Length: 146
Image (cartoon, rainbow, N blue to C red; front, side, top):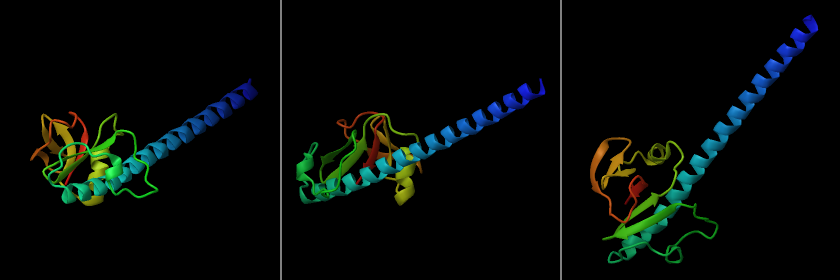
């Protein structure tokens, strides 16, 4: 009977260690996904902002071929930009990883980053802003405004 208890305890401990390892792996994967998407949006935002400044009369979603994107860059699915009156609104439309707006803010401490709610930007730093987001950008999208 004692041997059965010892085997059972070893199995319970091994199962606990395996579950903890899986949890740590998932956390690392989630962080990598969030970090990758954050950096992807910043690269895309830079190219969109440069195009918006060079073409202030352009309104709409620019074709990626018009943007001066690095050759190595591969845009993440869900990342896009809308340009209006010389401003670039780079956004992520889709199921964003938890903490995406905060991760973007951590890089710059900017209040021009947040989520579109009822047509305005809600910043993780200051809450409701006076920044009106164009109707072409979906409700609930994470947005970087330039």
